[in-house]
Image (cartoon, rainbow, N blue to C red):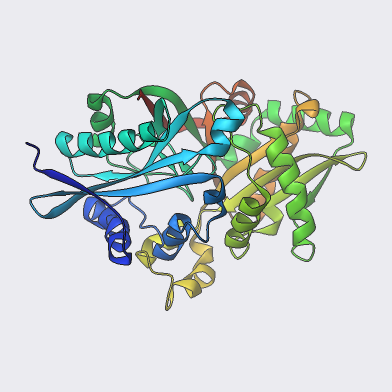
Length: 373
């Protein structure tokens, strides 16, 4: 009989135990960035996070000999299944000691919950969806994660594979160095030709007209990314909630829009890598953490290209090069000379070619696993 006991998260104490368990796993890991407790609670709050208007989730804790040894979430995303016409459930927020028995029990529990909901496959990690932190770190363990990217011990890969999970898809993160990007004659040439031919006009986010620009971003995001593997459109409420969270951190000059003949054709969201500051906050925003976001901003050396989208009818015209060139030069004016373009699907040829034209290197990889139910 297994000595591992699984229980559902039911109380505030259980939720705190669920969240704080990560500190046990990473206490000696120099590369881990502690998540903000306030932020994670909000993500998991079924009353505050609009994601749960089209999804269900159950959280589980694992105990062995009276000690917490693991956690997992099981997620049924109705919007995903409607959009892709499948019955895929997800696991997420997975943390576990290096013990296959514990991992197996956690995976079995999530799988059984999803089976009872009518799912025929389990994919993950999704925390809790492809619009949030996504994938398991596969390669690049000797560096801190950039903003909103995942991080995990290497042995998690073994726990998944020994359980019987198979690769569903790999995701790439490209390292971009200003010196290498601006030295790309091809990028500069393509950007100049595309800008001249199209007459594209680039503008930046207006904080005064934030609501209007948010609507423009919604349009591009849901249209440009629609064909991608695993894509789930963000609802209006989800984008509004995301914008509210990111608004205090956003750098207006790095959120840009492209218009041709007054028609919106693309947009990019680039964020400064606030993980540099979050690391020293150890999960606490208050009482002084919030101040650090502003007083220590100059310490940030990286930015992350979170989204760059060109609507389908304007793709393959070199307009992505215009955006990349603009982003790199705008970031340099802020003293940011390092960037990460992430995440990019391994088979998204257009985005991969664009990163390669910038002399970017794949310096991290992430994996989505899947197992039949």
